[in-house]
Length: 179
Ligand SMILES: [Zn+2]
Image 1 (cartoon, protein in one colour):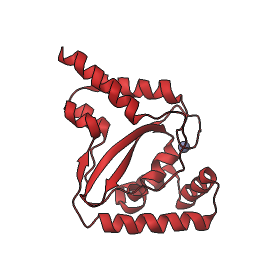
Image 2 (tube, helix red, strand yellow):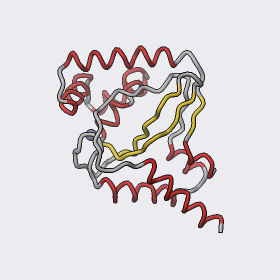
Image 3 (tube, rainbow, N blue to C red):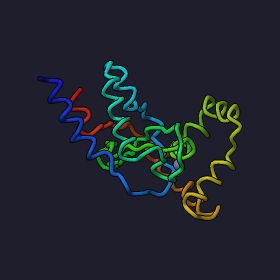
Image 4 (cartoon, helix red, strand yellow):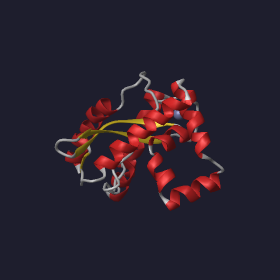
């Protein structure tokens, strides 16, 4: 009984979180340094509900195909990317959408990890990726110039610094009510 209800909630939730057929510009979306973010995968993994996690992945594949939701690149290695909104007044970050995105778009969204942590920097080195590779992909996807990246980057850093001064509550939308 519970399981049946749970699945129903998942379906409703999925339709809210996955908006297919729309494309979005690639943005640098830095999470405040005070947030120890738990990804949806980590939550499902911890609750030993990986079969439900597989359902989410399958649903994403059905709706978005094996393409990156942001840049459209076909790939068999797509990441489930979380899109957060920030309620700066109440310091709550809210999970609003999830999508399949390619490796580069995924990395650029979370540039804080790759540029600012020792582990991230080391990983990039091992992968043979440079800052220029990130910027090139960003400009290609957004059809913009280097100075546009610079503008977005500086804005993202300013916002990140301001938000990193505070603790944040994480709201996983309706996902939280089923856990
Ligand atoms: Zn992409």
